Length: 126
Image (cartoon, rainbow, N blue to C red; front, top):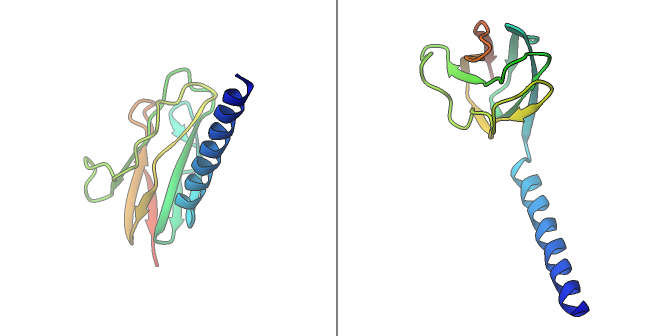
């Protein structure tokens, strides 16, 4: 019985190590942009970025309701950028991340449709 338990634990450790390695390998050359929301606004009102891969991390700072994140090309305000949805709605005091978002040169807008906030600008230049 002890041998079976040791084997199960060994497999669990090996699996978790491979999972952590795979996550780190996936996130190479990805920049995390941290944003926080207060009632009715983001604390960061504009961003100047280079083309590349980004994860947007949103923290709910003292907003009583759950928050979301909306990232669009400036010229297509109803088209959400691929992978830019949060992993979950963000409750008070919580943080959530988007998937990996690849931004090319151009202008983008971000906002929260649930808070709601103004539309803030991301300028991406090479």
